[in-house]
Image 1: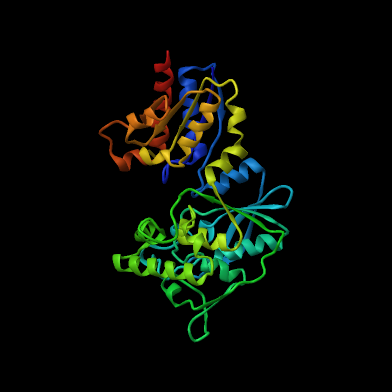
Image 2: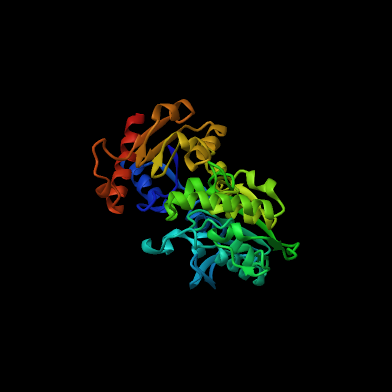
Length: 368
């Protein structure tokens, strides 16, 4: 029996690699002779570039930059073995987890440090940038990133702005630099939101970054204003332009290409090749529900597995809409937890790994 275990991380609980190890052990508990292929994966959110760096054999580097509150920090990213590709997470420079709870205020944060990372990579000779844009602390429409790369923003008095979320509505003029023709930026995205509007960056994501209801309205109006004065308002409605507080839009203005992060990761992980001759693929993440059918990792794994005619099972921390998920192609969908579980207990890494191992063992036993 050949089984592929291909997991995303269980947020705040297990890394993708840890989940794969736990599932592998569970399969071996049930069938010690099984051939197991472990493929830690990600879908464009936090941790995506670490997964990519592993598959690409990239070398870690650090550079000086600023966090979302413009405090000096050192940020990590990685460079491929040929020196051409830089692999980075925007959250390394402008991530929400870097900001203390008491200081989280998306009106005042910006993506300047993200631009500093890109600038540093280009200075090192990298002409290809792979950047994951999950986990942001910002709603600045990517203006901070653009400012670090040489874009100049002016208010009505022709005073220079470093645009934070609360300053977007003050932008009167924008002067863009000449973009290096040799630079190619691929943005790894795990959401499809436009820049502004009811499904945009402010309304959907700003509240979890410290925004009040009043802040959300102000930020959304600022993002709409920014789209207009940018000179390219049509980009604001592109799927993913609202990702990372509108960083997707700013990167589009800089000539980047938005891609589904899961497609890039699955390609580098060579999932399709690993499925050759497999009897089953087991995937999962912290929660799976009907939203998982819209670009999340388990559904991406399912699509690849269906092409190879391999059944796909899901093991997740929390499961909703199991019948719908099965109707859409999953062979089996299970929670690794019991119906009456204590969340704080289940979220402890050692307990989660134990429960995933047990669930994988039971899944294989039930196949016979």
